[in-house]
Image 1 (cartoon, helix red, strand yellow):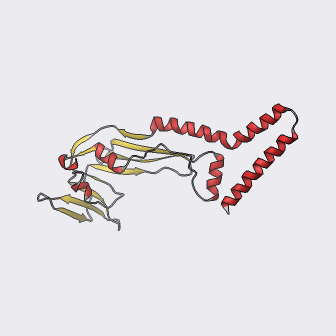
Image 2 (tube, rainbow, N blue to C red):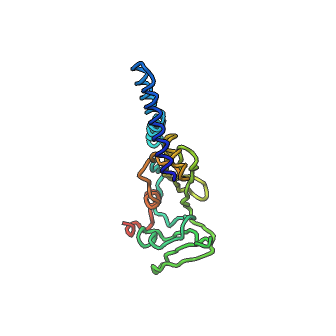
Length: 208
């Protein structure tokens, strides 16, 4: 239904513009109407994409302010800790949160065995946190960062900025109760890249 409405609106807009072109006499007025008809639904979309590129160059992507060596582990409250962080990436401790909401921890013991502890108090020095923007904004920022628990110092951050498109794109997306897609900074930096480039694990050889 929404798609049909969009087609009807576009057809009506083109028909109205063509009708107006036929009505006016001077050639320059016809040209003016045609140019205006093209720019009305597209001009702000073009400007928005230029602004998005500028914002991405200034703010977007991966920003590492300080790298920490020989890190035992980290806390990611957004996930259930999984063993790959230890077995593949070389950390000894990974904290997070179980599906039920209880804080948990994976620990590699001296014999190499990995043990899961549930209902713990997180103690690792470094925390991975997500940053959520507001999808109602034409330019929406989201991303994640790693900070030091005790001081609040942000060691690194990844920022992605998405553009909802020009007014016509946003109008069409609104018919489907969606956010418009006028582009983003891309490529989005993964959690693994942000963490491993900022926090160098103590078992460095294991992480290679």
